[in-house]
Structure formats: C-alpha cells, structure tokens
Length: 271
Length: 237
Image 1 (cartoon, rainbow over the protein chains, first blue to last red):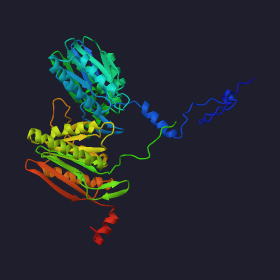
Image 2: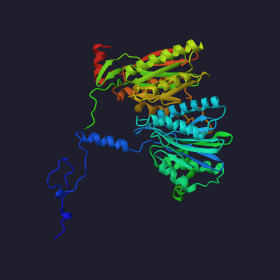
Image 3: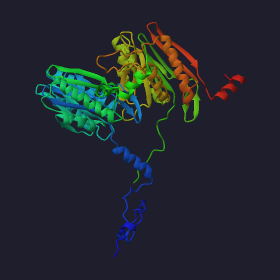
Image 4: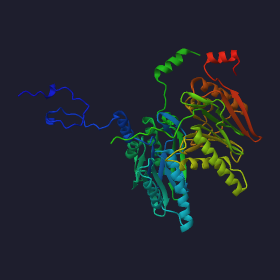
C-alpha cells in the first residue's frame, strides 16, 4: 500500500466543532475556540501571554552585601514615555525595592510598604526585617491577585541577619534567593550576571558586573534603556554607586578607534 | 459562552494637548482650548488648566468629565489642608496627593493625562508628569495629550536636560529664560496644531513666578488653510 500522507492537502483551519460521523478519517486540524469573535479572542490571548514588564532590573547578594541595579526606560506600547524613571525605590535607609511592571502599581505599593515599615519600627522599637517587609508586600499583592495590577519587584536590604533579597510579584509569589533579574531584559541580564558572578567579589567588581549586565540588556531589549543605576546595600545602609547613560556606556565598553583607511584619508586631506 | 463586550463605555476622549516647562525661577504651563468628541468640536474655548494652589497649576487632557471631577477632589483636599495646617500646599506635596488620588481609582481610572507645574519650596520651577493611574516623576519639561507624541520629541531636541538619575547629579531645569520658554511653547502648539486634529483654536499659557501668576492666550489655526482664508475674508472671526 502506497503511503499517501504526503499528498494530503492542508486541512481546513475552520473546525465547526460538530461531531461528524467518520471523524476518525477527518484530516488533522487545530483545536480552535468556539467563538463568534475569533480575532478578538486571539488578540486577548496574545495580550495574556505577552511578555510584560518592559524593563531590566537585577539584584544579587555577595560577600559584602546586596547589589541592586536597574535601567530607567518606561514604555507605553511602542512609545517611550520616559527615559528617566526611578526604578530603584528607597523604602527606608536600609532597604531598596525595584520596579518592574506597572509603574503606578510599583510606585504606590512601595510607598505604602515604606509607611508600613515605619509604623512597624514605631510600634516595635526595632527595624523590620527584609523577610517581614517582603511578606507584608506579598500579602497585599496576593489580595489584589487577578485584578490586573502588574508588579514584579525585588526587596533588597540589610537587617540583623545580614543581607536579604526577596522576589515578590503581583501573582502573589514570593521567593527568597541570592540572584534575581526581573523584566523583559532579564534573560540578557542573567546571561552576563550568571557568568560573571562570584560570591567573593569586592564592591567595585560587583557594581561593575551589575552595570555591565544592565548595559547588555538595554543593548538587546528595546523596552529597556536610559540610565543604568547601581545601588549598594551594606551594614551601614544604602548608597548609590553609579548612574550612567547606556548610550555612553556603549562607547565606554566599545571604544571607537579610527581605522587605518580613515587615518590615511585624514592625512591626505592635507593641512 | 463567548465573552460579552459592553455596548457602552463610561469613557470618552475630548482630545487636546498640554505642556509644561520648568525654569530656574519660573514655570510655564500651557494647554490648547479645543474640546472635541470623535470628529466633532464641542467648543473652541474650554480651559484645561486648573490653579490648584498658590504655586501649583495642573493641566489635564483626556476625558474632561473625569478631569473636572479630579480638579474638584484636589481643590477640596487642598481646602482641608489649608484649614488644618494654616498654609498653602507646596507643589511637591500636591504632586504626591495627585498621584495617590489617581491610584485610589486604579481599577476604574480617571481617564486624565496630567501635567503639574509650579514652584518648589526653593522657588525653582518644577514639573511633574503623570500617567492615568498615578505614576509620577519630577522632570524639567513634559507634554501630555493627543499632540504629545508630536510635541515631546521637539521638546527633547530643544530642552533635553541630563537625566536626574546620573551620578554625579546634574541640574534638571532648562537654561532658557522665561520669555524664551513662552516663545517655545507658542511654537510647539503652532506645530502640533498643524498635524493633530484635536489640537487647535487657542492656547492658554499660564506663567508662575515669584511675582505671582500671569495668564495669556494665543490664537491657533482653527481649521485648514483654505477655510481659514475664507473665514478671514468673510470676517468670521
């Protein structure tokens, strides 16, 4: 018997969902939604799975403390609404939060978290731990789960137990870890960060690694850009280490040297 | 069961553009005066600017019903503040109040794109720019509304100041003088009127400085060049 599967024409993509007798012999077709408005439905699903949170933020724990870095671009669809957004939010003098996702959601809830942390200090006569602060935020976000807010944040700080780093998101997730990157540029940042990371780095080496990781993410991800900010949180509190325009960083890492042809042409042009 | 879509929307977009520029000791806030719905013009003489506090002015484009409601809420809150603290709200304080007010309606937002301008406690110009749900940022200049995608690149070209995130920090206010800034605003609206159908008629310009508040108007193109000519000949305006 000849194998004629290769001769079959492509099946019709419109499945009517009717259970026709002899369906076993029907050509294979995609399962499609039983919808009147197919285009609208598809648009909605694409929106659902679309990689959200156009940004690059990262944070990691190392020997000397916690390093936190982020870009500063805000986009509304394809329009760059700002190149100077503060994505590293100062919750209090020893704790930082990063912003990824909805700008208003992150700003508001971090401000709210700062208030709650201060109230905790006043009520308990001691600073709140990073574990506690991240739990407060995670619980609030969990209660708003499914309502459409978009928050992908890292809470980084130094408390009695040493350096602390948690990832908290608007799905209600909360993860403790040593190394995180959040946002559309995070795959690129992870590549640089993971390959260059050593626990025993000095503060200078760690800040350079963080800066480089952000730079590389802004280079490849259209939704990230602006200024790469790097913060350090240590036993004495938080400190901003650098803020560099990524366009200028590009030429810092890839200096322009005139080629020999250009040199000759300059010389040939004469005095 | 397919998802039901609403036949009626609580929102409408009345169009218009707003701009604000911060200077070393002044702030210029401007908005056009056209109010539209769809392809119709509702009025050519509607103010989108609200004087919230002594040194704080807000310009808002978007859905003017929501803008009006927002202005009323902020005015009322400011009055309460004055009674409780015996002083006017500073511009940065009003900026945060606006952000919180917008976020409290996060799940049924004010369809209002705002720009807040004024003088900070040191007398320097400050501009705050917002999205519809309250995220805000202090900047040297900003534009919002239907013409913002036309206006913003031009302002970036003329005024681009170093980002406030750079380290070592560099000042964000524009080096322009007050007269130059007003002139720039007039140019910007004249250009936006050419290419944005929702921007036109008149531009209302408010200038805040140590001497107080000053308001002026400038006529803009109401319609296409041929009809303008006809209107001029028949003396329609």
